[in-house]
Image (cartoon, rainbow, N blue to C red; front, top):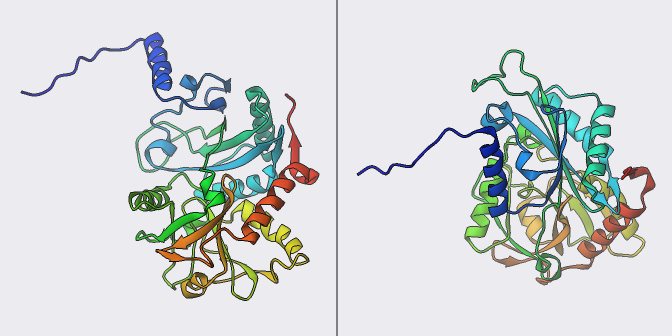
Length: 328
């Protein structure tokens, strides 16, 4: 016999109650949410919603970016906004003025009351139909979320990560350099790694050069002592990587590296590296000790990964030109 489920038409109050019950079953640390569609900020996670017919939801036609809240200040927001605006241009998404977006992000952060955490913000072409192209007269959406941020195990830093070359193809450059909400290849790559008992994966391009990881960049310390990072013309230009490539020159005087180079990195050269690391705004800098069941270096976290993480942590608290005060 067919299974029947009792269904009823819900009232608005019942919908809100059920959304709150859902958040009780799936506890989250979402503290404040701005929606241009609502025209304001909400702090109840049950009300942090986007319409189902928004083009970002049913077609993946949206972009996003992330910034960090460190000791009550927003770190490196301008660099992230630069990338957000580039992604919007590529995706044909209309944005509010830069100053307006910055103001909304700062005020939403203040409304959260949180002095440590992450800011994620999105833009979409808006709701109005389920068609392939945006609905006529659709009003673009801008959304800001203040949340706890992505968390990674301490062992990733103390013991290092184990990764694999993913079987999924790298995104074509146009899509790789655009930070869109279409992260299906990235998601499948990390799921594939976890199904094999590993921590993450690495994309390799058609020429046999290293690309990037799931939501992180990849860097190496070569046998020659050079800190090497893949070119950004076919991978996402990670704001954290770009900043660390500037800061890393300080490690030359400490004899930890001989120099910094952004270049194509063939897989064979990468496998012979002294150190391998993943870099991103959430993970910061984490050492990779094994790739495709082969040890990187001596199979232990190396000194450059540790030193880069310390440089970044210091920069996040002391680089005044990259910090924005939040009026709590």
